[in-house]
Length: 134
Image 1 (spheres, rainbow, N blue to C red):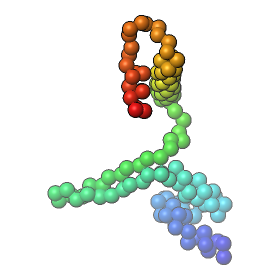
Image 2: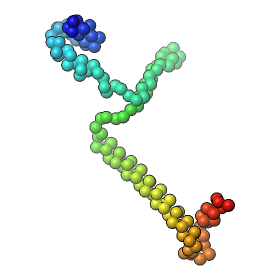
Image 3: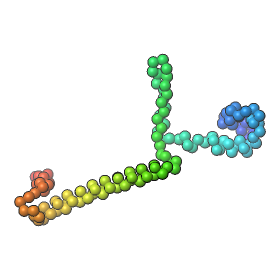
Image 4: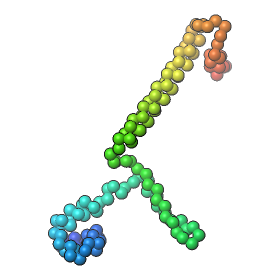
């Protein structure tokens, strides 16, 4: 029964159709099963976004494919360097934003405590902040 199922397997039938006649019956059942496991699963073809379609334009039909998903391939040296540069840029931007927020908070604290570092000069941040609560 198992042999009959393997003979009618669509993957194995398609594989045998594409092979030269001299090779079609030269594979053992074990070899055919191994080929099915190696090529039949297509785990590389699964994408989180897989949009395919056709568009009729004038008298012809054109197809389009839009695929997106996680990249499981090894990155080239250039891609690794660009990825590292991107990560460093994002980290620097986050640190800069946190530093600026920290400076504004320190300025507001200084103003709330009534400390004047530069007499008769103000950035207007404390006045603006107080105006929010009036």
